[in-house]
Length: 332
Ligand code: NAD
Ligand code: UFG
Image (cartoon, rainbow, N blue to C red):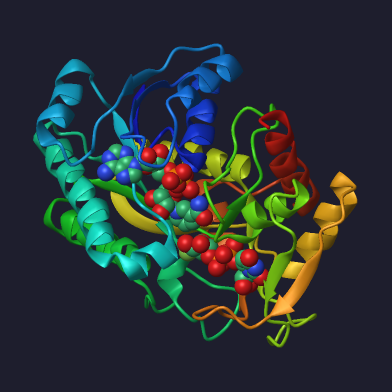
């Protein structure tokens, strides 16, 4: 079976491509490398010892995309391509709406034209906004607080309307919680340029002494130690969830929404302490003011994904902390 993976050179996409190749799928990647590197393709080949076809262009380039569908008989698509930095999306909303919506619209039009109607889409727990209760279930009300999140919610709605118009579509919308960790080989992982926004990349920069200490954004939240609680999930577990979703969309038509998390919430200080323990490195930190827009706690009810996709996360927080750091050590 041939799977088109948009954004396949990125953090989650590259891990998913490895899982697909390991499970004998043929993979075609489209990526414009706006947030990734071409060398990822060689790393994927090194890990899997398999070939992967790569096209470098912007997904909103319809002509190039049609050419890919002409050259390859694509059975299903996993759509990761998109911009994802919350803060940047507040500063540059038009860039986010243009990139995330245009690329998706182009993809859907071309899929429709070539009668390829099986899609797995990367959404985010950010669509739940400020949940009234925890854990978060898929049928909770949806509300976004930044342009990035709004692009995800808008795409979810577009996909819903598409399915209503044509029930031959088969769509799985995956709402990720907080992916961290890296491939156990140390060849793939996440290492953003500049000062990281997210917790694990920041902890790593403190571990490598590129930054002096971690700013812990608030210790007066309504959580066990006062610091923010999130549902961290190992990126390899997340990648495996996509194979289960592909299985689902190939077998039956319909549209459905799934939380991909572990169902367990850890605080900022839990993550810091675990990172220190498993990697034997001291992480200095200072408690600073809350970050605007942050919520106390966010973790998933994962029972629906378990029931419908036959998937659940297996790796714990220690492995997440170990693998995240291993990737950086191996790629210094
Ligand atoms: P990433 O930035 O590492 O990967 C996205 C890839 O898409 C990059 O390689 C980038 O170059 C490519 N891309 C972006 N716009 C493109 C375009 N117009 N045409 C072609 N390629 C394009 O991000 P990631 O962490 O791997 O996230 C993958 C998806 O999952 C994104 O849609 C993101 O919004 C979503 N998501 C991520 C997280 C997270 O915390 N990492 C959480 C929830 C949802
Ligand atoms: N935090 C710090 N210091 C930092 C960075 C983060 O204390 O330097 C804290 C935050 O306050 C929060 C927790 O660490 O309590 C996690 O923050 P992240 O920025 O790593 O993750 P978020 O939960 O804020 O958001 C991430 C993505 C969103 C996505 C969401 C759910 O950035 O795009 O996970 O998937 F929507």
